[in-house]
Length: 141
Image (cartoon, rainbow, N blue to C red):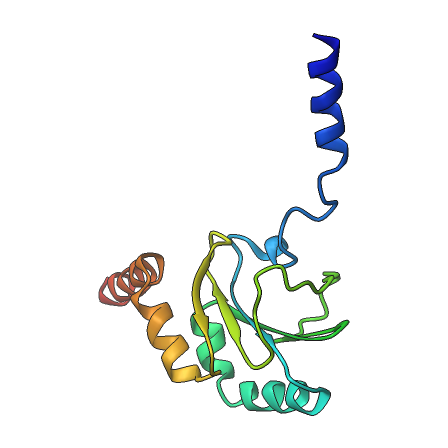
């Protein structure tokens, strides 16, 4: 019995310290696109490109997180005190991105960052469709 307890204790102690993804702190607050940039200039260009869709981000409760090596940038950057430690436990190559739902789960993996496609995929999600329907009903009232 002592051996089993010792084995279980050792297994718990050897678990990785960061068992949750770095975007988990946004769970139920925002949808997220995590983009793994190919270079620092790619990182900057992707943030600049995202600015033209600011209204769409707001409408969809969407945040954009760009990761390049040890650097993480967010859009919109509201100055919140969220500390993100980049990782790539999901085997995403540079130039690829992940769409994370409000529940914190990975919904899509993209090989190209095409905002219209991402917005279309978000708008097909059940929770997003419920948000749209709720907004319609409140306008009709």
